[in-house]
Image (spheres, rainbow, N blue to C red):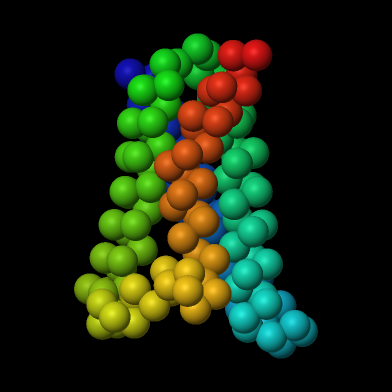
Length: 131
């Protein structure tokens, strides 16, 4: 039970990291290097920070099965997508095509790396821990 509570707290930490980096990107980097490069850089930095946080969580949690790590990563990714898309659509009034545009890798959008990192990195961190 403690693992699940800690996993929820870790997810809140992910959300805080994302909010801080996106705020910094919008307030500082967009003006310095342009919004497209800024968004790409911020996305990579968010992914690296989330990878570090997930690695720490997996080390703390001890030996979890890869299936458990997959379910954990799936839960984190689904919660993040639900929050982002739900707030974007229902609270901010954005239409679905506008929200989905942020996930279009064929237009150079890197943001899908974030939920993919949440989904896949727990298993990678678990495999690294098994060595």
